[in-house]
Amino acid sequence: MSERESILARIREALSVQAPFPGAHDQFAPHHTAAPKTPAEIRHWLPQVGSSFEERLELFRKRAGELKLDFHLVDNRDQLAGLLLSLRDTEEWKKVGTHIADLTDFATVKLGLPICRTDGGYEVTELESCSVGFTECDALVAQTGSVLVTSRTAGGRALSVLPPHHVVLARREQLLGDLPEAFALLKKRYAADFPSFISFITGPSRTGDIERILVLGAHGPKKLTILCL
Image (cartoon, rainbow, N blue to C red; front, side, top):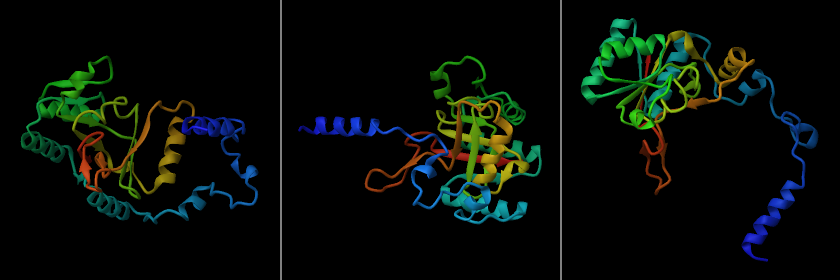
């Protein structure tokens, strides 16, 4: 039997066994320990997170440093505008990719640069030519240092991926403790109609495939900045 025939035979064998319905795995493996189901059970296996905003903020800052992303907490919109203008001038931004939302609209007005909006029709090549992509988000997750985005809060699927610098504009009240809390938020907000795209962005795009050398920006933005108001 050739290697090709062997692979096809294993595929046919696998297809002959009916897959269990989602959530029904335990009845097919009664001798195994059941997987945790409740948030309390899940949290037992995850890194601990403080309950106060200050504890969660400290943890998120720590994760940001580990993940090589830039995180800034600002007190008001004037400080936010100052940071945006500083980034614009330092990195010499030429065009901004964005979507319609309160904080993104504020940012693009302050920057005064040409805009590619992804809410309606747009050319992919135009978005690719943007120096930076601005999005809002659903939440920040202190436990992992992640940004939770969906197609409805981040201007579609491509805006957080194509421009080389992704800037997330968030609010203090969006800082959550852990992943169970983030999934509970998604269920509460979208249970009746989930978005077509949900993603946890944990630092800039990276790979270490070649001789274990870390390379940023291999499959997406090489820089991730989070500005939290």
